[in-house]
Structure formats: structure tokens, C-alpha cells
Image (cartoon, rainbow, N blue to C red):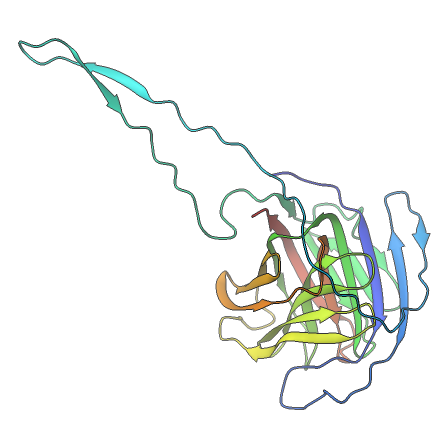
Length: 286
């Protein structure tokens, strides 16, 4: 496993969203206000200007790390049969079992939250703190305010997975796994809610949310206060989605052309100190 030191990026944006459930929120206006803060290892900060109304669309390519393996060498033995010359026989090399699961083999990147050096942060909207081997990721309660926190390195294709629980989740509170955050508040995320719904969303640089897969009920999700895993297998414009390592859906979209950072999103629907306890963040190159 390769442990990489992250550069953390935090973006906080306020926007109306299409939420799961029986109520149709599709007519809600988008609120075009934003606040952003970028943290680097050098402790420098940069404040962004308000985002404009444009959405950028383009096609995709990145490199992924590779690993070399060496198969065991073949061995030869000698056997003796009465009245014949010794005959060499070969013992076949053991067959290497290669997992076809997206999470098979050693992860390229793992964050298990031993240190809070790059994860500890607090603002008026978000509290992020490593504690006892978990990341406490807390939306303070501003309704419908989305906060996300992402880390280097940048990847496009591969399998992304996080392990978490939401002990005080209520109503339409939401937690998500973010991929392909490219620096312009344009990214994808797989979100889950308290009631066992999940969906896949494109969050645009214009503060718009486009649900590429509308939120849908899944029996694979455990209750919000129990530990769950969600994962995204990304390959160019194709995506597969996993809950507790069971495939639950797929989608295609080419709106985000490049790789980017990955991490987490939290949105409170009004719950004060909506908390997600994150145990791991993993990535496998594919």
C-alpha cells in the first residue's frame, strides 16, 4: 500500500438541490452564492470570487499508477523409473488468483485517519476532526448548505471507496463520496441519505446539481447509524456504483473530462451538527 500525504481542499457552497423522497423539489431556484477556502501544506489560503453561470463540458484521459509483479520460478525435479534413464518432470508454478473485484489486491491509496494534520478544520459551516482513528465530519446545521473536503492525489479512473456511519442522521441529511474535483467546483458525487436512498450527482461550477441517477431506495444500505461502504468504479465516461460491495447501479456521463481530487461531501437538511464518522478512504487503480 502506498501512503500519500494529502493536500486538502475545502469548498463550501450554498445551493438548492433535488432531494430524494416523495416531494418534488425540481422547481426550487438555485441560489448563486459561494464561499471557498483552499488549504495547502504551506498553510497558504486563497479566497475565490463568486462563481459565474456557465457550465463546462469536455472529454477524458489520465494516467493511473501501475505495479509490477513477478511470478514464482518453475522448479524441476528428477524421478527414477526401474530400467529407464532418469526422466525430468516439472512441477507447475502455482496459479496466481487474480481478483476481478474492483477492490481486489492492495489499494493504491489508503487514508485511515491516524493523523489529523491535514484533516482538522473548522468554519461556520463545517467541522472536520480526526479522533480515535475516525474522521468526524460535521455539518453545523445551515439547511441545504453543501460542504466538501477533498485530497490529492488526482485520479480519473479506478475504484474509490469510503467506509462510514451517520449516527445522528435525520430527514434528508446527506453524505457523499466525491470524485474528479478539478478546482472549479465541478465534480461528481455518490450520495446517501438517512432513509436508505442513494443517487449520483454532477455538481457544476454554476452551483447547479444534476442528478444523473435520481435518488432511489436500496435494501443493501444498512441503517444510517451502522457502518456502510459506498464505492464508485470510474472508467472514462462510465460509472458503476457499489453499496457494501454489492453493485447497485451504473451510469454514463462525459461532463467532467479530467481527473481530480476525491473526498467527502456533507449536507444538512437542518439537523444541528449532522455527523458522519468516516473510518477509511481507499482507491484502487484500474
